[in-house]
Image 1 (tube, helix red, strand yellow):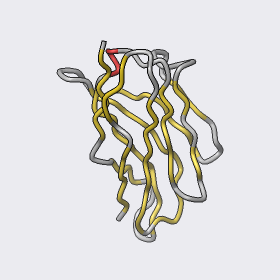
Image 2 (cartoon, rainbow, N blue to C red):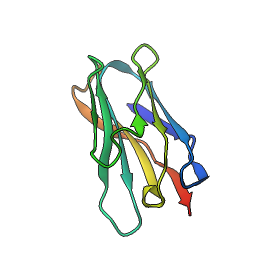
Image 3 (cartoon, rainbow, N blue to C red):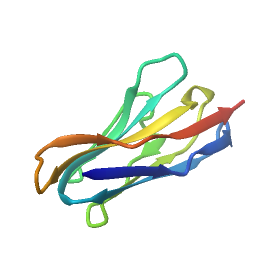
Length: 120
């Protein structure tokens, strides 16, 4: 099994910055990709950014130029550096990983999420 634990959420003023972290642990053979999703109140969960094992990245249009997704493949961790935060960025942010273990291949795992609140 693989466990994902997020940290770094909190309250920040609009225009401010916040850095989220996600650490994967367990019987991991390989992580193929890690992602950050978010779910705002009353809305569907949406993809924010992702990074694959080749360090290729993807950013949703609504965060391009403001967020970055640094990852450490050796440590199985991924961060989300969020700058110029907007009130619509208030959401629970979830870490997600496609991981291979000794008994499973290509299973997607989720963390429990961390709350980010952006005040006006």
